Length: 265
Length: 260
Ligand SMILES: Nc1ncnc2c1ncn2[C@@H]1O[C@H](COP(=O)(O)OP(=O)(O)OP(=O)(O)O)[C@@H](O)[C@H]1O
Ligand SMILES: [Mg+2]
Image (cartoon, rainbow over all chains, first blue to last red; front, top):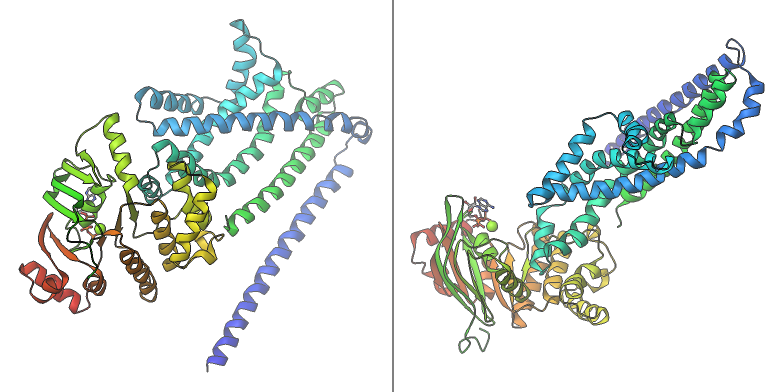
């Protein structure tokens, strides 16, 4: 009887696995069909200038470095600001709490695009002229920092009261408790969303190109596209590069998450 | 039971302790002496204030008023300021605490959990901390898991590591708040055995517990709490055979019928 029960469970399990496999296969097939359709559209029905593509792909691709550069610098700034804002939010000192909430509210209450132009166009009016890269990093970093502070706050909140009490009971000061017990656990909690934020950043960094001072993928694409009236081709090239970057970064992120999920650390 | 208790002066001295949570009067004018090497069990109904009493001793809860004295460090409850914080810190160095939920640090290995306090708080030399930690892990039977992470341990193993972590701070008094209540029944024994060993090694212990067998066998005194007061304070034998307070009798009958 027991024997029969086991084999029935196995059968059910196998049927389930078959379904999962089937689903995955169908998804992959549809993806390939959609991709094929896109390629077909652009190779026949929609006329595109392949000569333009051949001449300008390298020029646009050489903006990848700048795109990654600005994204990495911005995310580093964002992480620092987010951490400070999250800690400020926990502070019992009124001015510290106020500065933190003010910052988050102001940034989240205004468009990213406006903030970027503020750094490039409004500051010079006050006599502050920043190099393009720095202005872009400041704008993106400030913006993402405000949003990511919520992630850190959630991370800190995810650490149980018992953890703090155990630290306090062995005589740790509040600072030691935060640095050695709470933050390491909060950061681990925040790593997957931070990965998502970095991937979004690589794409949002394209907004900075609108100011004309940062020569990233987007800037290069719009420049050659406009110059030769081939924006369609130029934007397709840029889209492919952004998409590829996202796919690669997502793969990295999935691997990292799988490692964290194993939870041996 | 164990020699050398009678002659000792109290190592924990609680005088006129009151604790309010908002308007809720949780501890009512409690005074209590615990002598060196003494093992005191606290029993009582849920909500009677056992945990709060224990947590006031190491200031996880700030007393509303009263005096807590541990091994010569005397702290006035309800005070504030830097001097007060310094004294509280000294008291925490003299007390180790074991929690119902273990509260091991999940991002640190077993060994790292145990040396964290001595190294970070006491500034102990790391090699010295490791050898001390290994000694204590060995005595709770957990040395073989020293490089493992808490996630991979059973509840009983976690609690034994938590005991080693507290011991490695070399406290004068150990506070246990229902150390076996979160454990599967088959894992309770291993933790109680470790606690018996700690008691035998001469540690002063205050233990909130529902384990009447442990109280009967190991405790020098059993305190019964009811509605924020100590309603009975007696040797286990006396308490279990001739309880004075009807509430104590009711409590013991409940344990007898295995209801907890
Ligand atoms: N942080 C708190 N804020 C408000 N009330 C609290 C707090 N902690 C405990 N209490 C209340 O104080 C009373 C005593 O609680 P305590 O945890 O000391 O009881 P206990 O005897 O340990 O009970 P149990 O056996 O359930 O652990 C209870 O009424 C409880 O609800
Ligand atoms: Mg309790």
